[in-house]
Picture 1: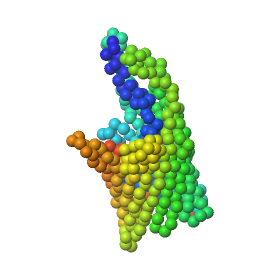
Picture 2 (picture 1 turned 90 degrees about the horizontal axis):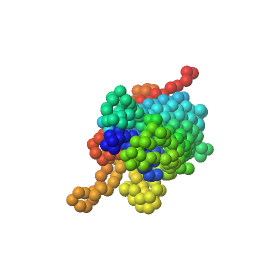
Picture 3 (picture 1 turned 90 degrees about the vertical axis):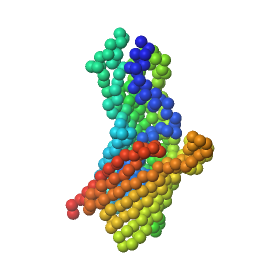
Picture 4 (picture 1 turned 180 degrees about the vertical axis):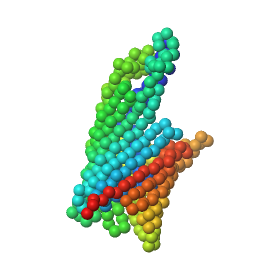
Amino acid sequence: MKLTQTIASFTLLASIQFVSAQAPKYSNEFLSIGVGGRALGMSDAQVASVNDVTAGFWNPAGLTLIKSDVQVTAMHSEYFAGIAKFDYGAIGKRIDDSRALCFSIVRFSVDDIPNTLDLIDASGNINYDKLKSFAAADYAFYFSYAKKAKLAGLRYGGSAKIIHRVIGDFGKAWGFGFDLGAQYERGNWNFGVLGKDVTSTFNAWSYNTDQFAETFALTNNEIPKNSMEITLPKLILAAAYKTNLSKKFSLLAELDNDMTFDGQRNEVISSNPVSVDPHIGLEIGYDDFIFLRGGVMNIQKVKNVGGGSSTIYQPNMGIGIRLKNFSIEYALSNVGSQETLYSNIFSLKLDIYKHK
């Protein structure tokens, strides 16, 4: 009986206990993946230079640089050989020459997970008609506002975000948080700052234990309890430089530094309590029509099997094409693994102008 119950609860254990064991420093990590083909091709170096609807996610201050009346974008990607789906969409609207609004949605999910709790009955008989499936999905809804300041070149904005995380009918969480950002432009330089989860983001988890408490008890597994999960603040400081190499060629380089305050991490600058994770992005444009991109991120030191240590990093690359009011972006990236599990990522963007 114990073996039977163990088999029946395997998938549910993998989902629920993973969430329950999350340390605060890794809460809501699906929002660390990044959105948009341009950003992912540049290794997430966006906070200083972002100037389109994706600014609702990267730095809301950049929404004021949208030139069209309305801008819409969408992205789809798959990770881990298609097991995980990552989707993003946003719509931004310029209120006037100095203000803009944006709504964004992010979804990361693993769908069609087998639920085998009722597959095997008490007598050990297998009934495939009882086999069901569920999804483990994470959602984030961003409501962003941005405004240009009276000081020339300065703009600022904020995003209120609602988090919703679901594990089938077994558990769910709701959370709420704020991001605040600013950009300052001076000559060829752009500087950016973003405070993520500035007041900390709190996810309140609740579980429907009636569906699995008996199985967990028989298999000596801890039954999860309603709890609070905290996402601690993060500060990103960024600088970008853009120049024209010739009449038609342009170059943009950006350096972002992610600063965390939740203890020592395996980053380039690793200390307690502050650690700094830099990522660098480059973009070469031709005639404002085609753009080649590349970047480096996740720079870490790892111990070698034979002793000593070495430095590893994750390179990304991408390309973008702009055709009048329509843009298509492509990136080759992954979710942070140092292995070669790269994914092909496409995003689309449309500018809409009012009829005069």
